[in-house]
Length: 159
Length: 245
Image 1 (cartoon, rainbow over the protein chains, first blue to last red):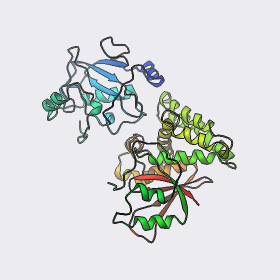
Image 2 (cartoon, each protein chain N blue to C red):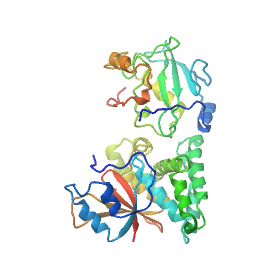
Image 3 (cartoon, one colour):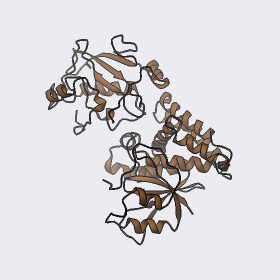
Image 4 (tube, rainbow over the protein chains, first blue to last red):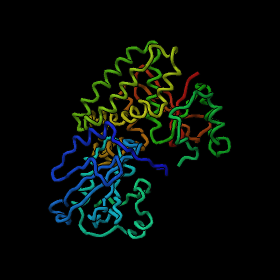
């Protein structure tokens, strides 16, 4: 993706339909989070039961680049309110998530709901709470830059 | 992979250029060690024009849709236009029955139906206008081009006996093949998806393979059958449109 990344400041017709239809037990979608830029969504959820994260709560922040739905939404674990970025081999401490459908396997057929469920299932199948290799360097270097500007390499489909 | 790089920034489809002169000018075939110039000269016995297509991973689908829509505007193809329109109208119900989200797919289907509705009664009267609709970055073309991908998946899912023997060698299921190799907007089409899309639409695509291997012949692959025929040039990694003399 090029460096001139721009985000929608309001929702498209398609995004509004997806928001209206979003329905996952124990997941709450907030359409107007006051402390986020306009056009952002937040999804709060508890760690899946029977997972290593069952006692934790998480917050995702979602924004849509102007090229959506041809490119993936930006989706990160939002730590700005004090909730953690989960300790997971594919999730960085700055909240960035390494997941193929958010990179080169993104398809316009995928919805907010299907993407959120894929992120949650990363937690369900995790066997060890560790950070990815190089987390400190990556998170310091990238900080709060959009994960859409990172070139991800997807080499591990076991977790 | 390819030493001849397509333009990734557009336009979606270029103006009509003279073939092979335009390709010889814009690509460094002449200095390449392969037999490209000889192959282009062989093809010039059949073709005199080309439109180059944006190289963003959707060049096959884009060439296909452009070639199809332009020909549907030809006099004499009225019943083909009606047939394709009926097929697209019925496609949403099929996709929904195969597990695709109706609220997502209907947005794409509407754009393709909109595009079909803008085909003028005769191409000679309004070819430039139709071309401009097809290459407009914010027009119905972009959504319509992607919609060809789920249509392609849908055809494979409706005809598993044809595709399973090939697909299951490399992929765990038809569904995982469609999700990873057809539907992402940056994934190039390949022989299986080309076979599926031409069958789904009932049109014929001829692909001339400019591989540089042999200066005395060019391989032509013919996909599907139908009254409408679309001619394409394949240089490794990229498709462009060809026009006969």
